[in-house]
Amino acid sequence: MEALEQRICQEGRILPGHIIKVDGFLNHQIDTQFLGELADEFAKLFDVSRVTKVLTAEASGIALAAICSFKWGIPMVFAKKAKSDNIEGGLYKSEVFSYTYKKSYTMICAKDWITANDKVLIVDDFMANGQAMRGLIDIVKESGAELVGIGCAIEKGFQDGGDGLRKDGYDLKSLAIIDEADENGFVFRKQ
Amino acid sequence: MEALEQRICQEGRILPGHIIKVDGFLNHQIDTQFLGELADEFAKLFDVSRVTKVLTAEASGIALAAICSFKWGIPMVFAKKAKSDNIEGGLYKSEVFSYTYKKSYTMICAKDWITANDKVLIVDDFMANGQAMRGLIDIVKESGAELVGIGCAIEKGFQDGGDGLRKDGYDLKSLAIIDEADENGFVFRKQ
Image 1 (cartoon, rainbow over the protein chains, first blue to last red):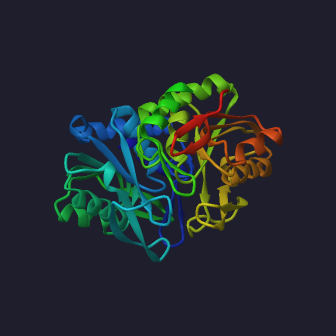
Image 2 (tube, rainbow over the protein chains, first blue to last red; image 1 turned 90 degrees about the vertical axis):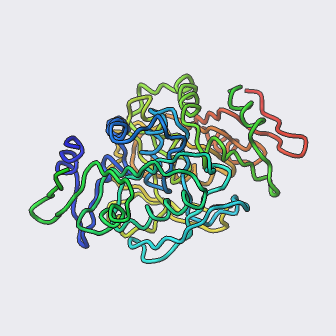
Image 3 (tube, chains in turn yellow, blue; image 1 turned 30 degrees about the horizontal axis):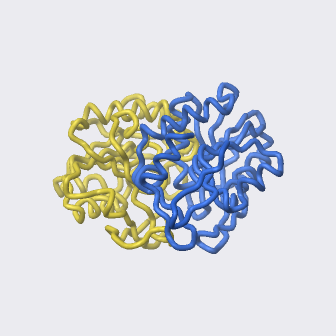
């Protein structure tokens, strides 16, 4: 998606350790009008009329999923990082290793909100190693729901998360895939 | 707001320890169309045409803030719980004690995204003791921005967070204030 690639070039920053920061429009300050454009792009790539739930992960996926959900008229669910004493039994659970924080956490989702009757589109803002995405996929599998597809705004193509998911047969669509990010700037995969 | 009170009565559950769960429409599964109605109600209570940033806290406030931001055409910012190695210097910080998790955490926000020129409306989904809300207020004060007001969807009126903020002179508007929640159901404050 050209508008997203342009925005990454204009506002994205590259930090040591191949960390890409787009926190001026995507995941700290958020340009929700622009998220609306991303939602429209996902709606061209997936048959959202079949989708009954938009699923994302706490925390930075929530805004994008909320705008998709709002524009498409479909409820959203966000999987949580386990810690709350507000969540009782009846949970789907998946262990996720976070490379960012160098430790594992348990991703949880109440069974009430995704069932075998649902058709789920996973939406997330960012993917590197794909661990959080695989946690969300686990939750969909546990529920027995149909996984319609996986929409990601920005994929770090030089890490193996996205290509691993494609190899495993998942219908993953990323709106921008960054194949290189260094002092020379960003190189995007042609799609 | 009558529609919100009705929804709380229909779908809200009361757990031991005065925990109120509205996770079927507000903060786990989320009815974003309904959040759109909440956003419209906030727009009657505050002059959103003056607002330059919608500010909320990770994680459950993000969806509501995103819908407000989208409907009003104003960017949003969410304050994060400190932990990421993705966030370098230049931060506003506030220590927040969470009664839910019985420990303190540091709420952070990059200085880039709220400045002295901003006019900030704080929006959050839920308030009990008001600690997270005071963390957000601290961030606005640190930035030198103007605090236009504080919009909260559901306030637990039987805890002191909201009334404490009103006593301190803040323009806090809650769309539903629950004054009692027990085996007899919910009692809402007349506003």
